[in-house]
Amino acid sequence: MNNRIQGLKIVIKGAGEMATGIACRLFTANFKQIVMTEIPKPLTVRRTVAFSEVIYEKEWSVEGVTAALAVRTDEIAKIWKEGKIAVIIDPEWKIIEEMKPDIVIDAIMAKRNIGTKKGEAPLVIGVGPGFSAPQDVHAVIESNRGHNLGRVFYSGAAEPYTGTPGPVMGYTTERVLRAPHEGMVKHVKAIGDYAKKGETVMFVDDTPVSAPFDGLLRGLIREIHVEANEKIGDIDPKATIEHCYIITEKARAIGGGVLEAIMHFSFA
Image (cartoon, rainbow, N blue to C red; front, side, top):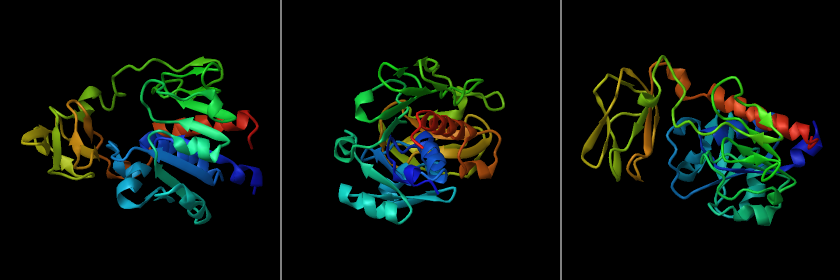
């Protein structure tokens, strides 16, 4: 085993679906000191494959990799010794100054840079649009589906945010369920359930949210308060139950791009 790899301290901003794909890829490549930051009430939709669930469940596993909640920063080392990824509530990224990591990865997927800069670590990687290398980060990973998905840019930026999800069996924006207005989410169905077109999947307050076509509920936000137009569900027309519980090809490709960038800068 490469002790240099195991000893690298990595902070991943975000613990949603894409960030989790990155974390799992790095962890299985033997990077064992990973801490992910999250907000107090994550808005993750594809919860079964996101370490953001740790905020509610204390521990969560995805494809055999387990993450655990660190309530305090002094608990992180213990979690690492247990062979797990640490997740901490830290929306202001204070852990970066305290830990002084070797690598910082911004995987919040905010479609813009909300404060990440090269000075945060010897290697700083930005995922998706909003980052420019080498100006504000050392490397940028393409996150749009297509020929360049997962490509690493050491000079330049990722493609602009399109606002349209990648097509699946001809469906794009229809696959995403959004809150009709501000309010509390109440589930009718669960992740992995099949829904017929027009069938109620959940409520936002008293307003029903229906399936736009026949498909499998691949993602579902927790029963929390949401803002109008917030993404609250994901319908998969392929209706393959296994897809609810495994990392997507997109997240896996992005994770591969991050791994490439780390190796490129000779951190291994």
